[in-house]
Length: 279
Image (cartoon, rainbow, N blue to C red):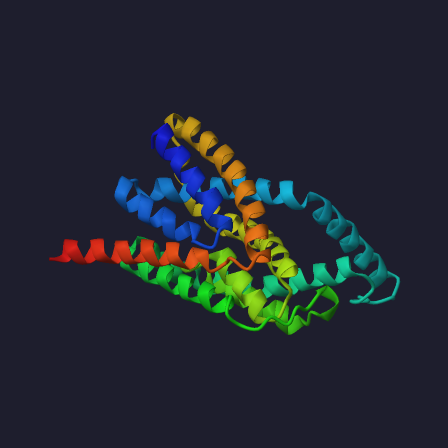
């Protein structure tokens, strides 16, 4: 892997992880056209996740700190016999919703990770999923919005969004797109929808690292790709930060549908390329 490839892959990971265009789908396509070995991409992708985590922390560090403090407050209430007190404050309610959303995501990841990972090498399957992602983004912008806030959220809302995130382990299905669309379908207001979608991605990304790291680093990493890896992680963190800020504005301004055109075009071109090469 060259330095240029490392930077390109880092840029793709950072932007596509948070823009609703599927990072896994784009990495699979780039892997195909660059001819990069799957093992190299898998190990690199695990490290790139660390870059995207850095960008999430950079944007939401204040809220994350409040959630951590509230987590210990919940433990204290449980120990002292006061119970969960779900509606004690918005931070506690949000934290419990994040935990609830993580459950279906984790179950799907553990049970079906190997099956869906097998689709990573199927470029036509990735292209079809990109087209489907565009369709869901288009539909989400054309449905009536109820505008629920944190206090009005139900556990079924969180579980549904977590289910959407779990399905997004399929290459070509955007994680951010699936969770934001799922949040809007659940009736969450736009500000909460994008915030909740990004916050629940933190345990999901950490879980993916835990699941993928043993296989990815089983044979170690060659010293000559250290510089491309470091460059890729830095680029992923910077581009991820920009992508998060962009998505907050896009969702708030009801412009989510613009990414439909992009995923339709990319998916269509890849399908056309695949068809032409079968002749």
